[in-house]
Length: 277
Length: 270
Image 1 (cartoon, helix red, strand yellow):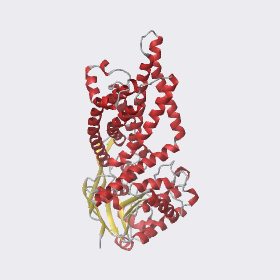
Image 2 (image 1 turned 45 degrees about the vertical axis):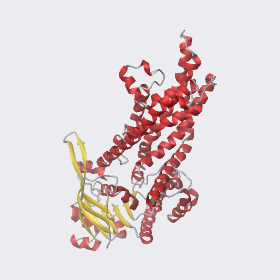
Image 3 (image 1 turned 120 degrees about the vertical axis):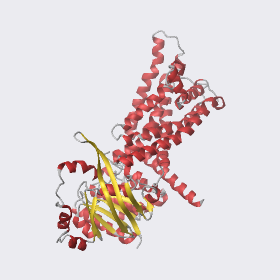
Image 4 (image 1 turned 180 degrees about the vertical axis):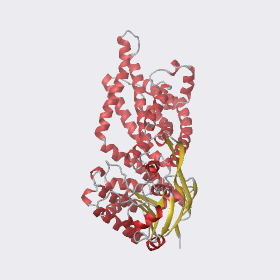
């Protein structure tokens, strides 16, 4: 029992070490992060302006509501991008710096190693998502008196478990292909959101894509967050979105770890951990 | 005598693609066997592509073997990687750090993986950096501002910080200026004396091998041709110097390149 407790303590210290490292690196690249934030704001504006564009071309819509709907889609897109980017960079960045072999030969479980990246990604992603939402909402002067932001935050956090699991599956890509693997993470992000109703209702999708939407955690995250912010739905009313997220999360974490372990085994078999690949 | 490292018929092959010959399996290590006693320092000499780094990577749990066995203090390297990882650390030719982070931050990051808290490393990191001769006023500087010699000292400090039982040194002084080279070699001696560490040193440097190791091995094209004390090696090959012994064992001079095609196929194993 005591051995297990000591071992768990070591693992948690290792997890904290990954978080600590990401804090250092984020501080060092803070100016770049600000630049990327400006880009994200600009990108979000191009999407959110669509609501006003529809009205300007004669469409009859509730501009405020559609603007908020689009904003939520863009914020979830950006949040998912950060989660995938950080978890994928667990491998890609270390390979670029040449530290990957030192990290992979350290006595730390891969769950804690990747978990450290996941914890930091969620914290950092939340800060960026909240800032992005606030900046764009202020830009458009959106009024959301009914919004239940706390419930929206809880939904995003619950969804993050599943996002992290999927992120682990994409993190394996730079192990298999050192040159192109990291970019494939963006493909996964796009595929996930296109079937999840990121800027439109899932009902407009073809049947087979609607089926995919039912197993995508982003579908329930978007539905739940929109219900909480647009309609002020309390958390109790969002159980229909929470339980699928919990279920998908419970499946994605072990699946993500398994996929990563297979990728790591492949990399060790074929000598892909080496810096030059 | 306790065996720290026990390698038996270890094999590792990689697949290479070639326009002329298509896919083919190239042996990086071909039935290598040796043991290292606890507290012993063994040097392995070999040209680029001889399989030295593959051997170090296999013992570091960074590669999976294709045959044979490798044990560190009785733990199977491939079946019990976690137990081996607690005992082994490595210093390679590339210091490999997060370039924007400082020496102290990089050491802190590495030590967390070995269960050391911030409170534990607050004093031990400055102490270890001082021991390797790293200037105190540069602890907070990004690694990218440091010379290769300085970075290699931090790499040694990283290895020492985790109190390794087995230290794998993969060309630790390659590319260093003569002074830094001597400092690193002196530090390796100190680690042995103070920590009773077992050391496997893979190197091109004949003088370094002779001065640091009790036994010297010759690895050529994945095969370990000999592993003996320097006098035994000289006697076996009727040679006056280690370089002559290397030539007699391999049929090539130490600095000669192997034939071009072979070098190209094997360069990845360096």
